[in-house]
Length: 372
Image 1 (tube, helix red, strand yellow):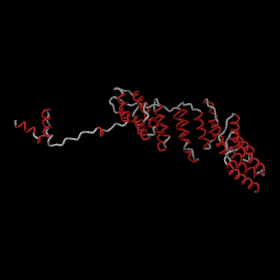
Image 2 (tube, helix red, strand yellow):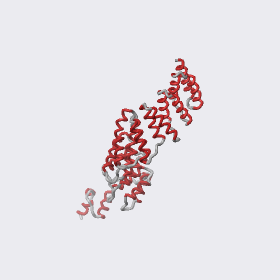
Image 3 (cartoon, helix red, strand yellow):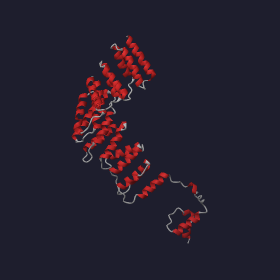
Image 4 (cartoon, one colour):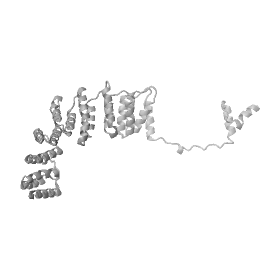
């Protein structure tokens, strides 16, 4: 009896009591010495956020033994990229489940669309490290994302080289379109163009060896790259090959050739392509026309330059002040100041963008050159 009372004394409340009756007795004996906890107020219970509620709902909707197809459906149903990312991570931790290229492709696209670039970068590194089998659409989505971010530009070509080494996910036309476009965005200075032209040549060679048939858009980019680097013979060679691929030249094709030839000093050939384009009912861009006008004027082919100016105005394109000034200046130097004044008046009537200020500036220039 004394032993039983000793076991139930307050001194031994810390002992591990296995009997339920002893536990109740122990708690009753300590109630007089310990203050009872305050009752929990309902207002102090934390309310779950809508995001947590949605997450739990989708987790319950995923039945045991769910597949990557089920997860893809759940991810595509989310408008919130953070919720989609949480579902993606939760499912990846479940026993017996592994994400595939479809689930990775879906979550990467949602992260990019939702502007969660850090999520996208993390997921892309997982994919490149071998987290799932690859597919061409997944590769292309990664390349598009990397091409759009300056510090990931070289990473895009790492992914492309991995595609070249793969068995079932070789580069397609979209792959080459993305890479060509990314390279051409860096053709902003002549000395830089030559550096990236080597990469363009390599892509073209690999595209042909892979049997990928280019379209007009890709061929135009190749022509533009050559023309920007003043490799006009190469540009014209690609132009002549367009028919072999079932492609037709458009206004952009001719525009790149005209500008490249004019900048190379082959103005006559450039004007020939311009006339060919006009004959097919195509309208050149404003920048193409202005390069041609200035080149013709400086070659003393003023009548043809004036013709192109009228073509621009007839197509609702407005030359800039430099273009106008180049043509008018060459007329004045040739002793045709009166004709220059008449043309200026006519152009002012046809060009609503010229404005009074530019008109007076051009008028002063004509008077000054005529007196000289």
